Image (cartoon, rainbow, N blue to C red):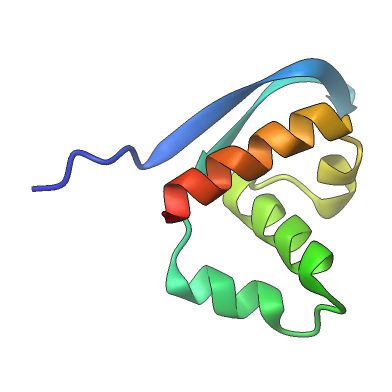
Length: 85
């Protein structure tokens, strides 16, 4: 039996506004192969694929993810890579 976490929560150093509320954390679920295929369809490059994947895994809009401070986004990237590795 696997003991791997199915979700990971990232605490934002620079909270953002989302739907009129302050977003202080982002919780992402583990990605599937299907997620990878889905986000690549119609994407114009690696950065867009990654942005779409973060959006899909966190159930937040691409527009919301795009508001993240770069320092927080780097942390989100790191956590996502860890989940895939």
